[in-house]
Amino acid sequence: MNHQIKSAQVLLIDHENNNRGLTDTREALQLAENAGLDLVVVSPGEDAPVAKILNYGKHQYQQKKRQRQGSQPTVKEVQLRPNVGESDYSLRINRAVEWLSKGNSVKFQIRLRGREHQHRERATELLERVVADLGQAGKVQSFDKRSLIVQVVPA
Image (tube, rainbow, N blue to C red; front, top):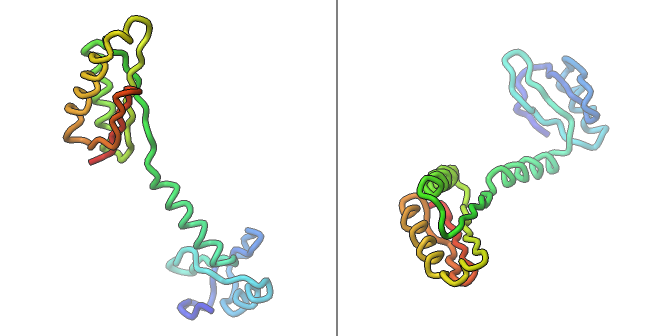
């Protein structure tokens, strides 16, 4: 069991999340043992630490799971047309730089409609321009000229 509890009393929260108030440490340990669980100090306080009766292994697993979930990068998508205006283009590039600085990856996709399919080289040039403009903020993960998609990850 945990022998690092210095004070004689702890603020106890039992396994059903009921606040038991100030309880003697030995009594709290006995309650945890009877429930077949562990007594864990959740936050060490000045006067009395807050202790909770719970399954410590499960508690650690859930903390690691939360940590992994928070650190997963998300993929932001930006769709462009081959004849995009200059102000629209710069706005989307600035937004992509912002996302990359926050650790997200950005996927640029160019949509072609009707006669735009006859000028695929313009769309490819636009994608190459996107890669050049995002050179400092990120690096290219994949560049698919056939489906006109570029995926950029943070540098």
